[in-house]
Amino acid sequence: MRSLKKKRRVQVIVLAVLSLVVSTALIGYAMRDGINFFRSPSEVLAEPPGPTEVFRIGGLVEGGSLKRGAGETIRFNVTDGGAVVAVTYRGVLPDLFEENQGMVGTGTLRDGVFEASEILAKHDESYMPKEVVDALKAQGVYQEPDGDYNGHAPDSGS
Image 1 (cartoon, helix red, strand yellow):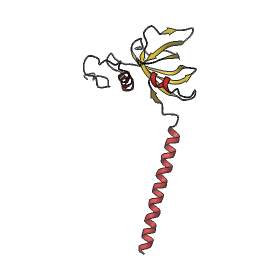
Image 2: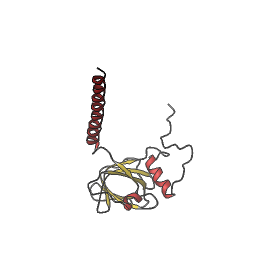
Image 3: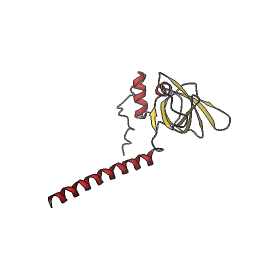
Image 4: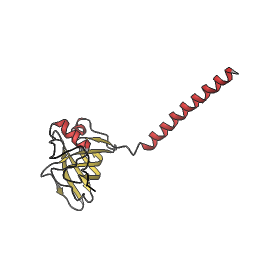
């Protein structure tokens, strides 16, 4: 009787562990295309990703680099103060997108040019994505804005 209980307990534990491993593998497989890693321009140039790897790049839009081409193609450079990466984007830029301001783009790197499929810009005068702030701080270029900055948008007061 005792041996049967012990055997059943071991079977239940093995089944639970096996179920956990299988479910973790299935979740990882399902999310493989949905995970986009953030990189600063310095990281992109130090270790260039593969041509099919989708990732996020962030930093400041370099002053004087914004050029609107024929059609909807827009070209600009993004920098973290230590490196500069050229970016191309086809589409409409966010209203608050401008030079010397923070941005985050999602896309791929081809022939040294980041081809963005999505561009995000700051949404008020004091917000900058945490990843961009961290990358700029690592390069020693980040300056704290006036007021309290905690990496989040200020409260609207309502």
